[in-house]
Image 1 (cartoon, rainbow, N blue to C red):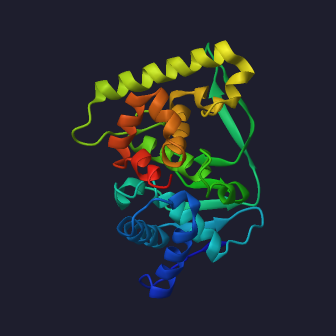
Image 2: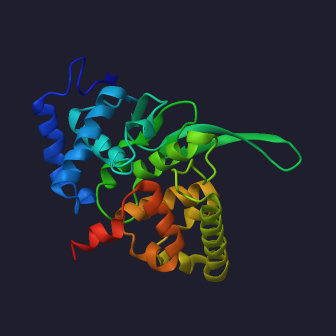
Length: 257
């Protein structure tokens, strides 16, 4: 099933009001000023017209589901504009985790394939795919957000395969980005080696150590939901994310304390 939230007409006041009402109640968006909420809702309305929402495996997509995804999608690109999410047109929602067939090349050039169970996937040449139950779980501020994670991958893919090095804005320094991220990634991998399972009790999900691309996506989740640990342990990375997303989330969320 393909769901078009705004249909063929411009965003109606009632539909904008629905986005606004949900935004004002979503814990993830706490701390945004009224002007920022207005900006975010307007951007979400643009995505509502630009993106098709498709239910997979029998899932019937409802307006409330679309609203939740739209608002979470809009948060990381609130100050980047609609162009940040250009080049793809569909969000696919599953009723649970879904299975995908992966192909990868092992050392020596041998190609392997196998099934993976995922709750989210951003495809370089296609849609963002999400598990709806996990989207619902992502509206709080616990450092875990599957929508932000996949949108971070999409931003990373604006210059090719996801590798943790998205296209930087004018004025950002590539060398400073590389140094900050490489140092933090190496430090976190060493921490996991030292602490083993104890590392799972920290603020950063061990999944972040899977690859530089996952490190960027997981830290993007943390940046928007609970940035305190990130700012304290990896301040250089925090500053890079402030510059990249054009938001100072620590300052914003500190107003809630």
